[in-house]
Each structure stands twice: as C-alpha cells, then as structure tokens.
Length: 248
Image (cartoon, rainbow, N blue to C red; front, side, top):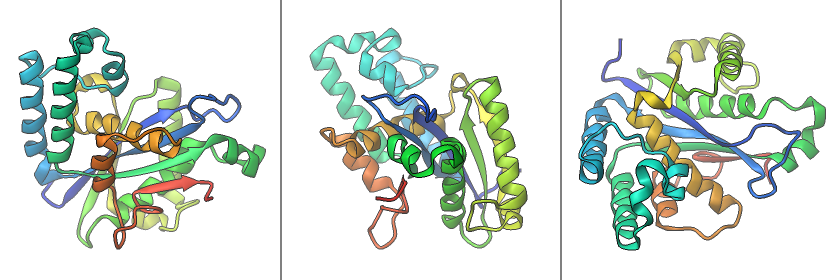
C-alpha cells in the first residue's frame, strides 16, 4: 500500500542503448527520471491538468517532448509562432512549479564502448543500478519507494524486469546491498505512456534538456529549470543528479 512515507521514481530514456550502432547526432543513452513524494502527487496532477485544459480543453493529452518539438499530431497548432512562444513559457512555468527531483545517468556510447568493449554491461542495466542507488540515497530512514519505468516493448520489458530482479536479489554492481534494496524498493512496474501518468510525462520532459547540454548544444530556459531540480550535494549535481558514464 502506498503511504505518505513513499517516494516514486518515474523512469524514462533518451537515445539508444545499442553499443553497436552509434547515432552521430545523438551519441548518448540517457536513463533518468523524476522522484516525487507521494504527498505531492495530487498537487502535480492538478498543475498539469490545468495546463492541458488551457490548450486542449481536456486532460487526456499525453505530453511527449519529441512530438512537441516536431509540432505534430496534438501539437500541430504550435506551428503558429505566437502560440508556440506562449506554450513554451507556460510549459517552463509548469516544470518549474511542479514538485519533483531529477536524477539522470548519461552513457556516452562511444567512450563507453571504447573503455569496456565486449565486457560492458548493457547501458540500460548499468544506468539502472546507478539510479536505484541515487533513489535510495534520497530516502529517509523510514521511507520506501516504488519505481515506474516506461515500457520499451515486450522483449525489452522482460529483460529489464529480470535485470531489476538480479540487482535486487544480489546488489550486484551497486554500493548498496541486495537486502537493503529489497527493503527500500517496494515494487518495480512497467507502465505504458498511454496510461497518462503525470510522473512519466515529467520524466520525458526532463531528460532532453540535460542531453542537449551534455552534447554542447545551446541551452534554453528549460535546462536551467531542470538543473535546479536535480539531486545535488552541497550544490553540486555532478555525480548526484547527473551521473556521466564513463567518468571523464
């Protein structure tokens, strides 16, 4: 049962975890997401639904960063520049006002492949280990957590469930023992984007600004907002809210 001592980690990904095929335009894989306190779920839902009602007069629309940028489908009306600017300003305000923290792992695929070669863990599994650690570090002594990961299709969903079970049972590759992972993580569930979970939409919106910044592309206002939401230690997000693999 979910209670007020529960945190929820919503996971999304960006890029491909395939180390054999490198996208020159986006040569990274990102796994990351947002951590939301159970007590803040209703507040976040109200904020996002108000935003959706303003632009679509309903709450069933699912925010997806790729579709927003391409201005296709439900976002085709954004081709009008005045509307586009207003929408971005409102979206940034939404991301700033909602209550959550961001944790991410960026796998630099060319460097990862060069360093580890054929001995490398699957990048998704490697990143998942790191995020589980950071998620548990975010909890208080009596808190527990749930993880909702976005579906990647049946074969990959099965693989990642098995990977989580291995991490949970053995703690392999983590600095946290398996028994502590078992006691702190109540469940790991795969969720479809079509389920319209606010947390998964937040995670989808949070990752692209961090990826663009890592690749040296111009940063926008959304990056500054997401950066301010990242886990940090003494103001430093590197190695906490933003973990880069391999380390530079």
